[in-house]
Length: 191
Image 1 (spheres, rainbow, N blue to C red):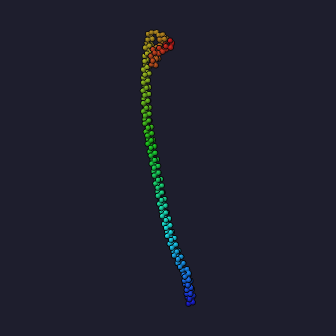
Image 2 (tube, rainbow, N blue to C red):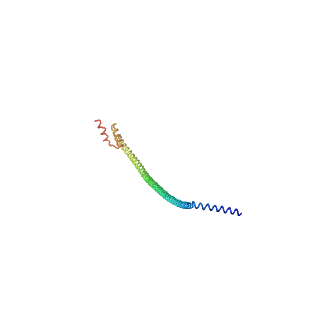
């Protein structure tokens, strides 16, 4: 075993020598490279951290702007919707008021027409009654006139001309004209 230990010791010694040789040949360059790598690693890490923080800041700023824009658009939409609903409500109220005014005017016209129809019916009834009374009065007057003339005829014999004149006078009285004015009209064309 001692031999193995010796071999191991020699191998280790040789390796140590290789390290020493390497240190002598490349030691300063190796240390300088290690320092540069460490500095580069620190610089890269710092740059990465700066870039990461800038990206995070930009992302937060973008998200904030986006959120503000979305909120602004949402408020505008809400305002437009509210305005539109108010306008629709105003239009609806205006239509209802106009409909009520029109209905009120129609009711007033119906009432006025009803009153006028009632008045016209009453006037027509009164006129009919008045005309009926006047007609009855004229009938009585004609009968009285005819009776008077018949009584006169019984006392006197009438000629045909006298009978025609009596009938004409009765007809004109019924019609409401004076016999003398009618006779004058009849006699004038003959001249």
